[in-house]
Image (cartoon, rainbow, N blue to C red; front, top):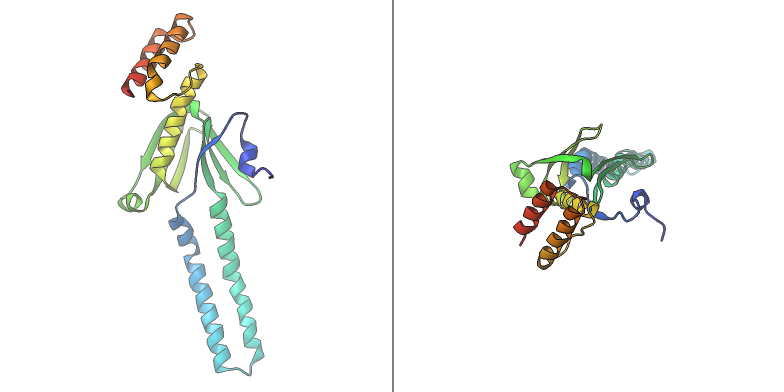
Length: 209
């Protein structure tokens, strides 16, 4: 099977954790007028044909229906190709149907994540996620994406696991936490991590027991 565009962006040992898009409300608001216009054109041309069956040119009115349908197809393609992806290393935003625009933020450079949801956002599960990074981009704002809580959680969990992987300690079940602390202690004794880093990670692990 041929690789998809997203899979082609992944680095070695990088894997996708979550993919989301803007909420379907965004798509519906973009195509609502086009749907109405399509219905009105079809109804108008059909009524004209029934009223004036001897006028063959009226049937060409159906060609006009292709205009809003083409606009609707364009909006659907734009919406479906705008993806927000969390991997075990970074957050990626992809947009564009034929020409692609890719913006990514390394998880290790993410300083803070802010999420805001209105009443309707909580009701229909959409919201804004703002990522503050130490990169030149500074701020990435993902507006009205679906599953914002799940998106934020996946990103924070991936960032935490990335910290352990960088020190050679991989995430394990809760029952293995004592062995993870032992591994961290060995890294501390070897001077790979500082006493402060050891205590911080140890506190995090103990909090999960």
